[in-house]
Amino acid sequence: MAEYIAKQIERVLREGAAVCAKDELLVALIGGNTEAAEKTAAALLEKFGSMRRLAVAGVVEMCEGVPGMSEKVAARVRAALELGRRSLDVEEPVAQIKTPEDAFHYLYVEMARLEQEEIHILLLDTRNRIIKRVVVYRGSLNTASMRICELFREAIRENAASIVMAHNHPSGDPAPSAEDVSVTSTIVTAGKILDIALLDHIVIGGTRYVSLKERGLGFG
Image (cartoon, rainbow, N blue to C red; front, side):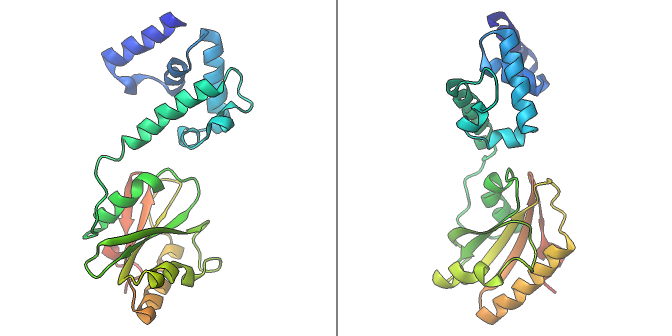
């Protein structure tokens, strides 16, 4: 196995990690006996189905039903995946939201890897500085199941002048749906009544985003 891992390390040094398949990278991390490590890597990929799901799994979950996976090895894999996630955070979060891109950079590291839809709200003061970030909803975005008042509860409590709303599309496609536009229109109207402006609604899909305000969707 040591020879196998050495070959993988040599390949990374010579060609870069990007050329290695997912199972090869996992085998190098798992270590131990060659055949056992390959079986463990294959079982991990089969259990979780994707690297996105594996990346959010805990140590105990990784060990359950996966032959050859000890807590020590699972912790090593978990640490490597967490380092990969943190490498995406290349910019310090902004304290002030001036553009849709500012909001996206502040939010995407946490939201890009979510497996279900969530709504996050940025509470802003009169100078568009961030007061607080709030997770207000988990589940499919629709007006039938979401209470609009929940979006403004913390904004009222914190005396926010405005909010930026964001939600994710786990599919990775940030294109707004008709329901996204409808919900946005409803929130804009509610914000006018409460004197708390909805500055933008950002849809995040992986490392891409769409600003409904820029596209004039729901803000007419």
